[in-house]
Length: 177
Length: 99
Ligand SMILES: Cc1cc2nc3c(=O)[nH]c(=O)nc-3n(C[C@H](O)[C@H](O)[C@H](O)COP(=O)(O)O)c2cc1C
Image 1 (cartoon, each protein chain N blue to C red):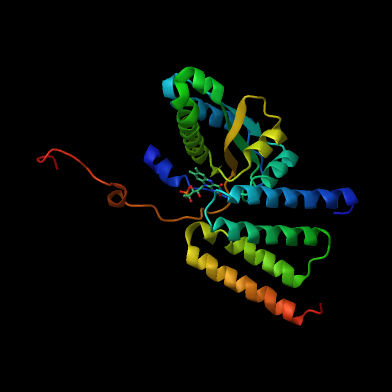
Image 2 (spheres, each protein chain N blue to C red; image 1 turned 60 degrees about the horizontal axis):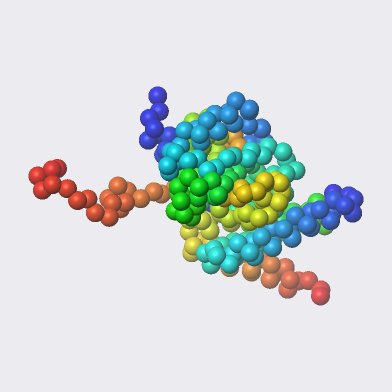
């Protein structure tokens, strides 16, 4: 059985997918993975919009220059920053809500990897244009996209930093190994 | 692609791509600019292809861009070499053309 670290290493940004649509039960697993992410002050100021309609995907892709390839689905993580403000204050509104969706996004990508779904996180998109296309209700903002599709293509980047390269300093007791 | 409506929609798609790229690039890394431009080139060739107006040369360039553009994410120098290559490809073709 794959360990969590195996799955983490297998997760890479995939920008080429098969045309097979993602099954409902797989999509629900991805949403469940997101729902289990931590959230500052247990506030969960975000919700998810799922798009699996070809026409709309193309239109969203047109206003999302960072959305590459031919994904068959998109998850849009949307914050309600007023809720974040009400629950965890100004830091919640300016910072924590974005950290929250990043945690949720990573959970989605890891679960997608386990299900054989290629994913790619996208920040190069126009949030107002995406909100317009999906008729996003106020006060939600479209803050993070994840493109999805059953894997076909290879990942682009190959190298990762080593443990040594990653650590800036390791402050420990003298006698500890 | 046949109807005027379809042709209009595919150009609109490109206009959205180019305008949202322009807006996004205000705050994005410098190298994303060249990347979006070659991505636009590929998209323009696809439109011409759908209109039955792309020739063998354009299709070859489209395939080359599709294959090599993502190197921008991992290898800046290789991406710049690729840009040099397509500039010369297009220039050689222009040299032969009658303006
Ligand atoms: C905050 C964030 C924004 C990103 N935006 C984009 C994007 O707009 N388009 C894209 O293709 N990849 C995007 N990526 C994916 C990165 O390019 C990718 O994670 C990185 O190159 C490492 O490769 P790997 O994911 O295969 O390990 C983004 C990643 C993160 C974390």
